[in-house]
Length: 162
Image (cartoon, rainbow, N blue to C red; front, side, top):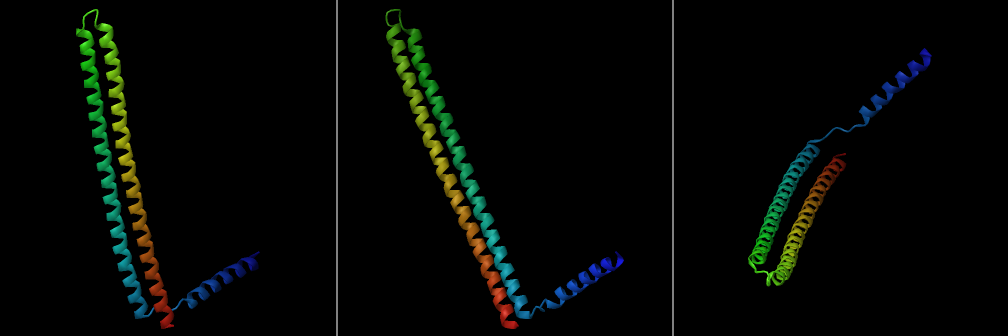
């Protein structure tokens, strides 16, 4: 058992020594290329985060605007319905059924108008969200491209120096 343990430990040290020996020394050109790549990576990541923040702000503004439109549409519909009901309440006995029918029609139109406004507002928010997602994805792709180009430059420089 101790021979097996000694052999395992010896092979571990041998593999560590081989791994260390095979790592090439970085030349000044490689270090310079790595620094340049790191700098461009950080710029790309900063740009991506700014794009993400702008996109999120646009979505938040669109959602707030949609909520305001929905609230206004609901208030308008309620106001219209209240006016129609007031006419029904004021109407005499002979006119009451006629005014009630008009009030029902008015209520239906108000509900339809409110629903249309809600759909339009939700559609705009969905469009802004889709555009924001697109912007974020494009920024992420650009960042990945910058990172890949930087790594390629480092690898190219390392290959030249060997």
